[in-house]
Length: 103
Image 1 (cartoon, rainbow, N blue to C red):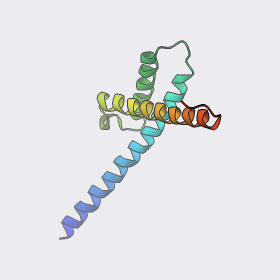
Image 2 (image 1 turned 90 degrees about the horizontal axis):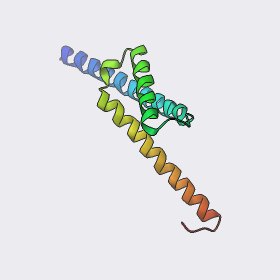
Image 3 (image 1 turned 60 degrees about the horizontal axis):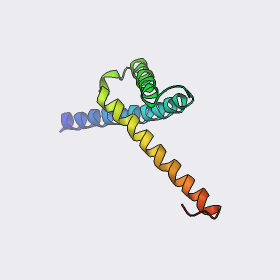
Image 4 (image 1 turned 120 degrees about the horizontal axis):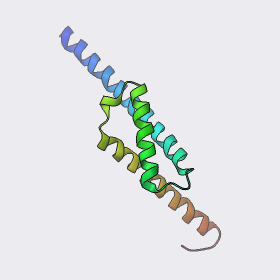
């Protein structure tokens, strides 16, 4: 029973660490996307490659590079971009309604 309890505690700690690094990494991706958006002469793909490169550097610096595959990193970036576009669209629509313009 004691060994099972210790194992359960270890699994819980590892799970919390994984969730924490994912939360921090998502915040870092958001920050990097904001940086990349300032590069007006870059294409969307060039901006994404910038974010991927910097994100991998951050993961490496935080000893978490093995926790995220390239496809996972790319999907996380796309999710943040999609969410951002959705929020921006809603904000734009709300401003148009407040100004008396129906979108």
